[in-house]
Amino acid sequence: MASFSRLQKIALLSLGAVGGSLAYYHVNSEKKEGKFGVYNSWTTNYTPSVKWEKNWDHREPESIVRPEKTNKPDDDNRYNEQIDKARSKAVRHLFLIRHGQYNLDGVTDKERTLTELGRKQADLTGQRLACLDIKWDLLVRSTMTRAQETAAIIAKHLDKNLEIKDCQLLEEGAPIPPEPPVGHWRPEPKQFFQDSARIEAAFRRYFYRAPPEQVNDTYTLLVCHANVIRFFVCKALQFPPEAWLRISLNHGSITWVSIMPNGNVVLRSLSDTGHMEPKYITSR
Ligand SMILES: *[C@@H]1O[C@H](CO)[C@@H](O)[C@H](O)[C@H]1NC(C)=O
Image 1: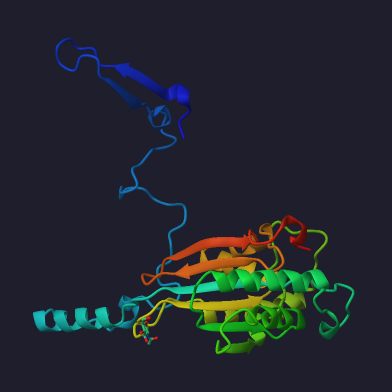
Image 2 (image 1 turned 90 degrees about the vertical axis):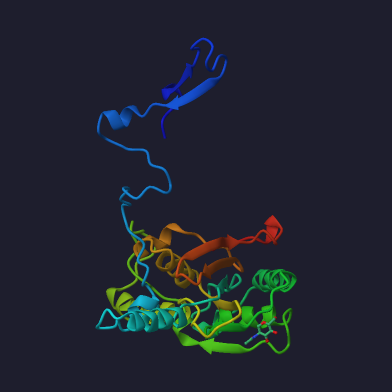
């Protein structure tokens, strides 16, 4: 942004014509020096540092429909019809819920149960999800104890007929070595080797634009873990995945990602615990 000093006020005082009117000119001195340019949002000659990969989920209609070999108008029409049929029409909303605070002294997963505070957090998040007035389509929970417990508490607040599934792919792990590295968290290379493929598979299982036959928007709850959610957010927004550890998530927090019919992805909230009194908010 140009600093205020570069905003030059030029009073158009040409007598008789536009007497008294005042125009502000944005003088782009950097551009004159050849360093930066300033562009309008609709401009086409601007090159972003990284382009959005439109076909990230392999569901761009143009990547699914085989082009016609001829240039006959009939073939063109048929092709365009097929493209239209392959086009997504609804939004897929994913609500990523981190489990509540849990007993870090536990050695096995079974011993790593929610603390009393963790159960409280799950309860508050369940209440919050219930009052959003959303018709939930599915709740998927990681098979780890703390996620199972959190999901059970949340489900108490939701429709009794809500479909609930377990998914091992959503378990906690080491998605990719973080950049910058941190001293206090150093998994073995072996762990990245196993976990990254699994968490990548989890991403592909849940992140994709709606199939063309889906008519209504869907709302899916994924109750899982901080590393998994942070990695998902980076991947979904096409940020460098190794940036995941720069994000912090609260216990019981709500992260809301929407996948639009054209494949664009919107992060609507990240680690939201606005429904909790500050005394209940923890992240570690
Ligand atoms: C889509 O939503 C409408 C209106 O809520 C409902 O009547 C219909 O059953 C839904 N269709 C499907 C396939 O869920």
